[in-house]
Image 1 (tube, helix red, strand yellow):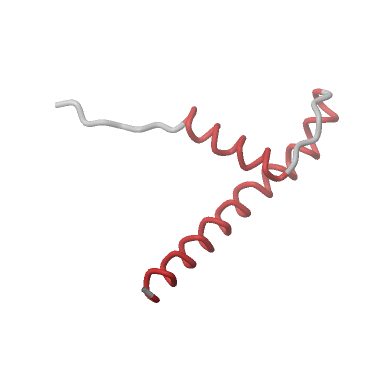
Image 2 (image 1 turned 180 degrees about the horizontal axis):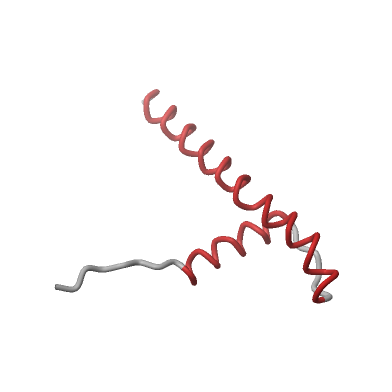
Length: 67
């Protein structure tokens, strides 16, 4: 049981670190550029994380081997 708890905590920590590493730069760049260039609103950290997830879904290139 202790091993499952440690694994769960490690996975949760990794997910949080990845969310911070991907969301924070996007939020900073958006808030520096977009409001001045295109008169768009500022976004929060969680909006940046969601935008990053949406972009990865829309622009993910999955290659399949067609024989």
